[in-house]
Image (cartoon, rainbow, N blue to C red):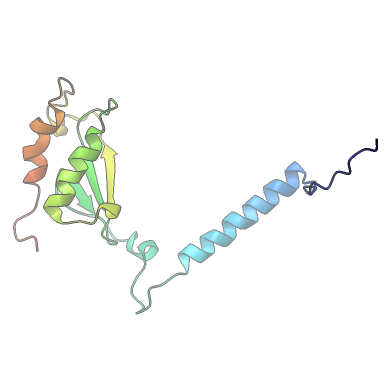
Length: 139
């Protein structure tokens, strides 16, 4: 009985140096693509909007020039997705699209107040802070 022929496609041999050079070239190419994109009507893009200082009406969130809302969460994430729940409360209050919401778990600075997490009370105790975070005259 004869041997079966191997018809599997062969991968090109690529050295470590060749891989690094091609990866760097692709990264550079993609960075130019993202930096040079504009909207159909010529408005500023997210790259240009990032140069503007974020709008911070309260301690609990900030909004950049592209409309991305960053929620400052003072509760520890212990597998219950507390950050997601609190960010959703603020997103609903601001009527911000969910895809434009980012969660930032803050440091232990005293300005954040009581930062205790436990007993399933992170959401209900923090709810008043985020549900009233909308600045006066907002929309």
